[in-house]
Image (tube, rainbow, N blue to C red):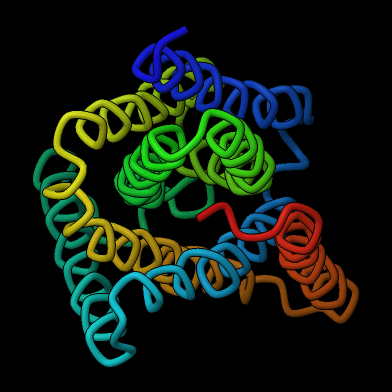
Length: 258
C-alpha cells in the first residue's frame, strides 16, 4: 500500500476507533452516572492538557513564552465564544444566563467548545501521523497506535461532556465521529504540503490545550461546588485524580506520540 493509502486508512480507522471505544463506555453508562463521571472528565481534560498537549505545544513552538501566550489568547477566545453562544441562546429562549436549566445541562456550551478543541487536536494528530508515515511506515503505525491509546481516555471525557451539555447519545456519537474526520484532513494536508502545515501545528496544539483547560476550569468545576457535603467532595477529588491518572498511565505506557 502507498504512503498516501496508509495515511488515509490509519487516519480514518484511528479516529473512529478512539471515538467508538470511548462511546462503548459512555453509552453503556446509566444516565444517573453522568453527573458523577463529569469529575473524571475534568481530570482527563486537565491531564491531557498539562501532561500531553501543552508540553508538545511548548516543544513545537520552541519558545515557552510564545506557547503560553497562545494558550492565554485561546482561553480568552473561548470565553468570548461561550458568551456569543450564551447570548444567542438567551435571545432565542429569554433565559437568564447560567440560571435557566443549569441543573439539567449547560445549553451545549461545553459541548461546542470541546468539539472545537477536539477538532484542532485531531487535525494535529493527522499531521503527526502523516509526518511519521512519510519518514517510515513502521514509525507511522507505531505513532498511530500511540495516538489511539492517548485519545481514548480523552474521548471518554469528551463524550461525557457532550451528554452533560444536553446532547443525545446518538448526537454525541455523530458529532465525535465528525470531529475525528479532522485527523484525515490534517493527514492529507500534511502529505501534500507538509512544510506549510507544520508551521501552524504549534498554534493548533496551544489552542487545543486552551480549550481543554477552559472547559474544565470555567464550565465543569463550578458545577461540582453545588455539592458541598464531604462524601461528594471526596468522590469528586478521587474521580478527578482517576482521570488524571488514566492520562498519565497512557503517557507512561506508550510515550509521546510525536
